[in-house]
Length: 81
Image (cartoon, rainbow, N blue to C red; front, side, top):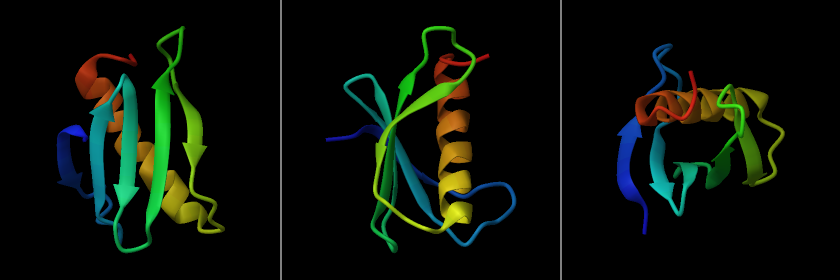
């Protein structure tokens, strides 16, 4: 199961309620109401995250906010600068 899972809202008070956790060295972002998920890996250069996979969606706001949530977790973990 997800370690250190927690719900978080983007600072812009988005309509999405993300759960962000770390599992097997990957950051997993889920949004329960839309059933969206995205999985990110640490990049070798520590400057960005790499999208490993995600549920297909046309909602670009959802995708952008999920990435923001993943980046916040990556900074907290010291994965990105």
